Length: 176
Image (cartoon, rainbow, N blue to C red; front, side):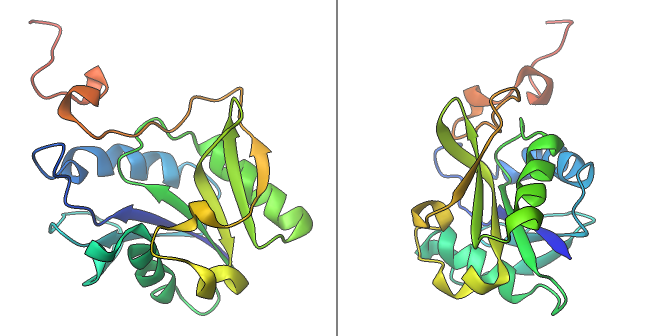
Protein backbone atom coordinates (compact mmCIF):
# COMPACT_ATOMS: atom_id res chain seq x y z
CA UNK A 1 0.00 0.00 0.00
CA UNK A 2 1.11 3.52 -0.80
CA UNK A 3 -0.24 6.41 1.26
CA UNK A 4 0.03 10.13 0.64
CA UNK A 5 1.30 12.28 3.48
CA UNK A 6 0.25 15.90 2.98
CA UNK A 7 2.36 18.31 5.00
CA UNK A 8 0.16 21.16 6.29
CA UNK A 9 1.82 21.92 9.63
CA UNK A 10 3.63 25.21 9.01
CA UNK A 11 2.81 28.60 10.52
CA UNK A 12 2.35 30.31 7.11
CA UNK A 13 3.89 33.46 8.58
CA UNK A 14 4.92 34.91 5.19
CA UNK A 15 1.40 34.36 3.88
CA UNK A 16 -0.13 36.26 6.81
CA UNK A 17 -2.90 33.72 7.48
CA UNK A 18 -3.30 29.93 7.58
CA UNK A 19 -2.83 29.33 3.83
CA UNK A 20 -3.59 25.64 4.36
CA UNK A 21 -7.25 26.56 4.82
CA UNK A 22 -7.35 27.84 1.23
CA UNK A 23 -4.97 25.37 -0.42
CA UNK A 24 -5.55 22.04 1.30
CA UNK A 25 -8.84 21.25 -0.46
CA UNK A 26 -7.48 21.64 -4.01
CA UNK A 27 -4.33 19.69 -3.12
CA UNK A 28 -6.39 16.85 -1.62
CA UNK A 29 -8.54 16.70 -4.77
CA UNK A 30 -5.43 16.17 -6.86
CA UNK A 31 -3.94 13.63 -4.47
CA UNK A 32 -7.17 11.63 -4.41
CA UNK A 33 -7.23 11.60 -8.23
CA UNK A 34 -3.97 9.63 -8.14
CA UNK A 35 -3.40 5.97 -7.36
CA UNK A 36 -2.64 6.33 -3.63
CA UNK A 37 -4.37 3.94 -1.26
CA UNK A 38 -4.95 6.48 1.49
CA UNK A 39 -4.32 10.09 2.50
CA UNK A 40 -3.05 11.51 5.79
CA UNK A 41 -2.74 15.25 6.51
CA UNK A 42 -0.16 16.41 9.05
CA UNK A 43 -1.26 19.51 10.98
CA UNK A 44 0.72 21.64 13.38
CA UNK A 45 0.50 25.40 13.80
CA UNK A 46 -3.16 25.67 12.84
CA UNK A 47 -6.28 23.59 13.30
CA UNK A 48 -7.67 22.58 9.93
CA UNK A 49 -11.03 21.25 8.88
CA UNK A 50 -10.74 18.40 6.42
CA UNK A 51 -12.43 15.13 5.60
CA UNK A 52 -9.02 13.43 5.38
CA UNK A 53 -7.38 11.50 8.18
CA UNK A 54 -5.15 13.82 10.18
CA UNK A 55 -2.35 13.67 12.72
CA UNK A 56 -1.21 16.66 14.78
CA UNK A 57 2.57 17.12 15.01
CA UNK A 58 3.54 18.86 18.26
CA UNK A 59 7.13 19.25 16.98
CA UNK A 60 6.18 20.97 13.71
CA UNK A 61 8.45 23.97 14.51
CA UNK A 62 11.53 21.73 14.18
CA UNK A 63 11.00 21.65 10.42
CA UNK A 64 9.30 19.72 7.66
CA UNK A 65 11.20 16.57 8.59
CA UNK A 66 9.63 16.55 12.04
CA UNK A 67 6.18 16.87 10.47
CA UNK A 68 6.98 14.14 7.98
CA UNK A 69 8.20 11.82 10.74
CA UNK A 70 4.89 12.40 12.58
CA UNK A 71 3.03 11.55 9.39
CA UNK A 72 4.82 8.32 8.54
CA UNK A 73 4.64 7.18 12.18
CA UNK A 74 0.85 7.51 12.00
CA UNK A 75 0.45 5.42 8.84
CA UNK A 76 -1.04 1.93 9.11
CA UNK A 77 1.39 -1.01 9.42
CA UNK A 78 0.49 -2.21 5.92
CA UNK A 79 1.75 1.04 4.35
CA UNK A 80 4.85 0.16 2.33
CA UNK A 81 5.63 3.68 1.12
CA UNK A 82 4.58 7.30 1.58
CA UNK A 83 4.19 9.89 -1.17
CA UNK A 84 5.00 13.27 0.35
CA UNK A 85 3.21 16.35 -0.97
CA UNK A 86 2.95 19.89 0.32
CA UNK A 87 -0.35 21.53 1.21
CA UNK A 88 0.89 24.74 -0.44
CA UNK A 89 1.45 23.21 -3.89
CA UNK A 90 -1.91 23.67 -5.65
CA UNK A 91 -0.46 22.89 -9.09
CA UNK A 92 0.36 19.29 -8.15
CA UNK A 93 -0.65 16.89 -10.91
CA UNK A 94 -2.01 13.42 -10.05
CA UNK A 95 0.10 12.03 -12.91
CA UNK A 96 3.28 13.07 -11.07
CA UNK A 97 2.19 11.06 -8.03
CA UNK A 98 1.40 8.07 -10.23
CA UNK A 99 4.82 8.30 -11.93
CA UNK A 100 6.82 8.22 -8.70
CA UNK A 101 4.68 5.31 -7.46
CA UNK A 102 5.22 3.40 -10.73
CA UNK A 103 8.98 3.93 -10.57
CA UNK A 104 9.05 2.74 -6.96
CA UNK A 105 7.03 -0.37 -7.85
CA UNK A 106 9.47 -1.18 -10.69
CA UNK A 107 12.71 -0.94 -8.71
CA UNK A 108 11.82 -0.39 -5.02
CA UNK A 109 14.42 2.34 -4.42
CA UNK A 110 14.35 3.98 -0.96
CA UNK A 111 13.46 7.45 -2.33
CA UNK A 112 11.89 8.58 -5.62
CA UNK A 113 11.40 12.26 -6.51
CA UNK A 114 9.74 14.11 -9.37
CA UNK A 115 11.75 16.60 -11.41
CA UNK A 116 10.49 19.45 -13.54
CA UNK A 117 12.91 20.85 -16.12
CA UNK A 118 15.77 19.34 -14.11
CA UNK A 119 14.65 20.71 -10.73
CA UNK A 120 13.79 18.23 -7.98
CA UNK A 121 10.42 19.04 -6.41
CA UNK A 122 7.39 17.15 -5.10
CA UNK A 123 5.99 14.58 -4.96
CA UNK A 124 8.65 12.54 -3.21
CA UNK A 125 8.06 8.88 -2.40
CA UNK A 126 9.73 7.32 0.63
CA UNK A 127 9.93 3.56 0.99
CA UNK A 128 9.17 2.40 4.55
CA UNK A 129 12.84 1.47 5.00
CA UNK A 130 13.88 5.13 4.62
CA UNK A 131 11.45 6.57 7.18
CA UNK A 132 13.99 6.41 10.02
CA UNK A 133 16.45 8.50 7.97
CA UNK A 134 14.26 11.63 7.62
CA UNK A 135 16.23 14.68 8.84
CA UNK A 136 14.60 17.81 10.28
CA UNK A 137 15.00 19.66 6.97
CA UNK A 138 12.86 17.01 5.27
CA UNK A 139 13.31 14.51 2.47
CA UNK A 140 15.03 16.96 0.12
CA UNK A 141 18.48 15.99 1.43
CA UNK A 142 17.94 12.26 0.83
CA UNK A 143 19.40 10.81 -2.37
CA UNK A 144 16.62 9.90 -4.77
CA UNK A 145 15.90 8.16 -8.01
CA UNK A 146 14.57 10.97 -10.19
CA UNK A 147 11.48 10.77 -12.38
CA UNK A 148 10.99 13.34 -15.12
CA UNK A 149 7.71 15.23 -15.04
CA UNK A 150 8.83 17.82 -17.61
CA UNK A 151 5.54 17.53 -19.48
CA UNK A 152 3.54 18.38 -16.34
CA UNK A 153 3.07 21.62 -14.44
CA UNK A 154 5.22 21.85 -11.32
CA UNK A 155 3.29 21.72 -8.03
CA UNK A 156 4.02 25.33 -7.14
CA UNK A 157 4.85 26.73 -3.75
CA UNK A 158 2.56 29.40 -2.36
CA UNK A 159 4.42 31.45 0.24
CA UNK A 160 2.66 34.80 -0.13
CA UNK A 161 -1.00 35.69 -0.75
CA UNK A 162 -0.04 37.17 -4.13
CA UNK A 163 1.32 33.72 -5.14
CA UNK A 164 -2.17 32.20 -5.03
CA UNK A 165 -3.53 31.09 -8.40
CA UNK A 166 -6.36 33.42 -9.49
CA UNK A 167 -8.99 30.69 -9.09
CA UNK A 168 -8.10 30.42 -5.39
CA UNK A 169 -7.97 34.14 -4.58
CA UNK A 170 -11.13 35.04 -2.66
CA UNK A 171 -10.71 38.67 -3.70
CA UNK A 172 -10.40 37.82 -7.40
CA UNK A 173 -13.50 37.28 -9.48
CA UNK A 174 -14.54 37.88 -13.08
CA UNK A 175 -16.76 40.75 -11.86
CA UNK A 176 -13.80 42.77 -10.56
